[in-house]
Image (cartoon, rainbow, N blue to C red):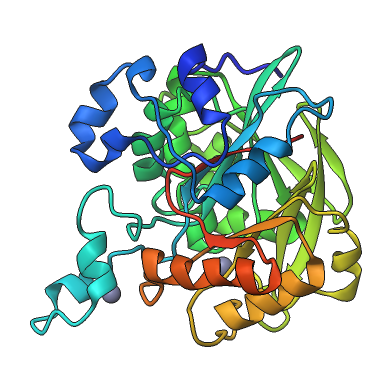
Length: 350
Ligand SMILES: [Zn+2]
Ligand SMILES: [Zn+2]
């Protein structure tokens, strides 16, 4: 249960808890310099903008255990940002991918995934939501920076490659950190994994001595379940016509990374949401499988969370430009909405 996660130093953590935390300044330099720095020197931090900083600070101190947070391991579409095809295009017409090619740029996005760092009096659990195609690269960059070691559980939203494509890489944990990892997955997605990851579902087919990921599969239904003392409520959504995906609610945080429609009964599960993380793939319109920004904003107005961070952005979403526009909505109609980015860490009440 209690993961033996390495803690960030007290000093660094107190900074992290001031509010939204940008990726540490070191992230702007080379990866080698980031991962070689000890945690105490990786102090973040400035607020995303002053409104959310004070809001995040104000949300604490109501009896919750201090220290829980969510870390965005990936905030982009399946193919990743930058797209290779944009960088190799002789006319170089994509400004977002050009910027994203620079290390540390907030337009650089990997597959959507968060890590819930659940801190209780009896210990800390690291609960991962999705491990897609780029999971190894996300973990390589962010686990050392945030002092993460164990993975105490993985929740799966759905069985597309950008949500489950990294499960083979969990072998590094089960070979070198811990004996196994519990996986929480809907029956329909488990059945997909019996085909795509047959050797992880049934390890008897693996040759003796081959060290594959040791995973314990737990089938979840569309009803609340508990993971290491954290109550998790599935938020069923449509991700394209007739295709079900799950969001998850934990505490007053609702996380929906892949959605084109929210059924009526799911809105009821999102009542009194403090932080909403919601799919918003492009600035102009929705696709058949994802909310675009206009629809995502309409959902925010309906769900009425205290603040919202969008995720799953494609290369048409320029981080700074879109956030500047979104900031105006705070003045106009009081909406606290921003784009998330890889490496963002947000303190949460769980
Ligand atoms: Zn591009
Ligand atoms: Zn998907």
